[in-house]
Length: 195
Image (tube, rainbow, N blue to C red):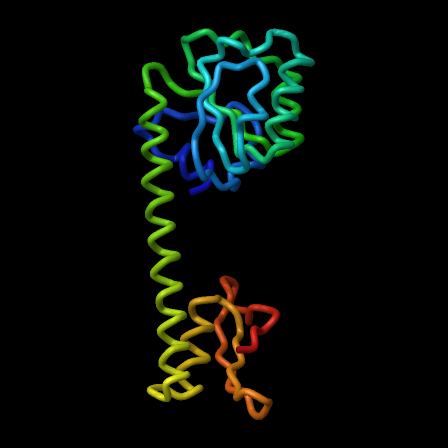
């Protein structure tokens, strides 16, 4: 799930304050903190949610917060409205825009757990999709190795899962059967994989 997809969910009451260039960042998890320096506790892909109790008031400190969260790979910062957050400075918004680091406002009274559940459910769906894809890859390879299916089946099946051209050949060399998949814009995906 991306930050933009999260913001587009109307029941969450999220709106973009700044950093629109980062709406494509992937949200892998959520984290809440009221620490003045939360970045040691935030991982790549985390959306940091806060009521703003420790949000600095000085512009330079707000900029530093955004820069540090971006440095550790956080996907964004979500600040609860009508709670304890001081006014956000234009300098912080400019830093957020420059870095493509989304700063979101959370409408009162949206509980953070509602946002966490949305991210958790989306993550579970993505993990299930990956497991199913991996299972299809293994099945195509198993069928080829056992002789149930030939290379004419295996290459396109693997190419479909990986989203790139795939060549399937015999051990020790020989001819390859190539499966092609069209990329999103109708072009062949680059860099074939040889199996």
